[in-house]
Image (cartoon, helix red, strand yellow):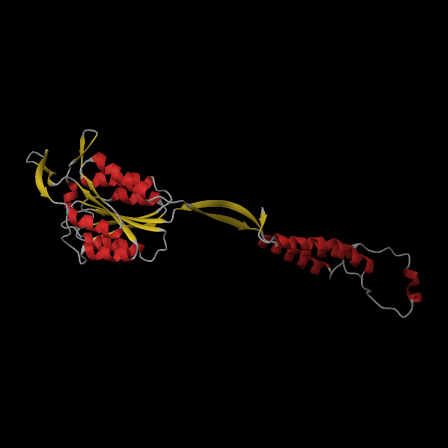
Length: 332
């Protein structure tokens, strides 16, 4: 148990001397007589203890109210929240071409979106003190998860993302950057970062990528860009007439020139992820580049006890008043 205002407890030290002074002065007279001869017959009557009991009850009530002023409380829980001061928005491409399976992990083919989700998941796990948000885009851009320190919630949303979640027929890189910048615009962070991962060119949306980049640079937002997959052709999975999985080689073209300009204008870097090992190393390098000391905030939940003391004091006060009108009166 702790006290919010412990200095009020010093008032308890005043109660013993006040009680002693009150006892020396004695009780106030119930009746005033013109001569003590009128009450000489009452000299051998012993003093009743009723008045002393009520006075003790009054001092007890006063002590309860003083302790209530000190605001006693029990600590229910203490939560420490660590925040690095770095806010990160990951922008992930969910266009149809991201289903291409040109990554190989442990001898098995993995499509681009699952590879991107895997490395992003590991990146999030390594950044527990950062607020991280998630933007997904294809023909349009959407906020999948707002900036949060609740990384369990973030990982759950990331795991749910699949090709086809949104219109997959185009790639709106400019809109994705604009959506991400808007999430970071009004924040007073030490560092604001966007990690844009895409395998195509901007062919949809209302905002041009370089225009969105200028807005990011003006707001102090750094953008890291990642070009996903092989250049030229990529193996796109399909089904033959017997339902067997086959691959069709389709042309792909990552707009590396634009992604490089986006990174350069904002002080970030452009990376090319054309195999699984390189993809994993890219996010590890970004993790090393963007490090800062964490700040810790403590949040403590209390259970306040003073209402119980006040209630007990008021109840005793009511009892004292009632008893003062019964057999505990100074004169029957």
